[in-house]
Image (cartoon, rainbow, N blue to C red; front, top):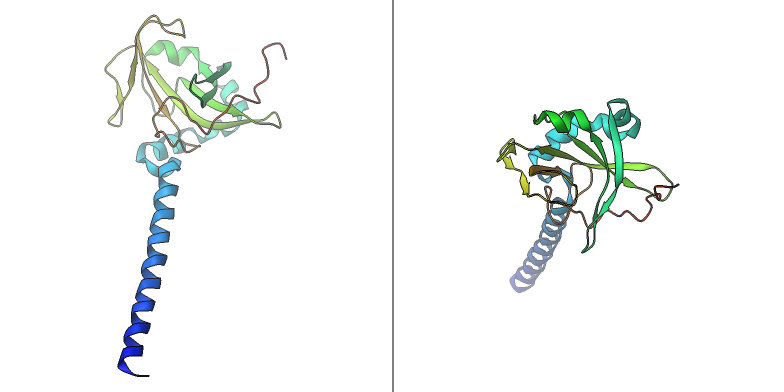
Length: 178
């Protein structure tokens, strides 16, 4: 081979490697954006609350379901299982979320997707992550409160701490009379 051919082959190889690296980098960024692992807090929440993968653990700990919550512009939060005792005590404890959120699946099962921390005392934060403020009156019939959703089990393209998740649906929630 002459020098010109070696140079062309080298350029071709470098171009190919650049294209491969760019593709891998883009795939990694896209996966990280929707992955629950994108936040260190989500990882801590998952470690502290994975017992709720089985909804029976939530009911055994005093959580009770409220109807599936959907957003008016799409997406949903899912079915909240709320612990009234934790809701009243105003304490923020990573291992004792006030609500555990499940997405109803087509086969009738519930899939853990997130937890929610709620307090009336604020401004509130958990591990440096600020809570959202909800004024009164509100759709929940509660006084003013602060809340933080943590999508620790299902990636949320709108953010790990966003209220609604466009990847969650209430489509398979049973009506209250069922």
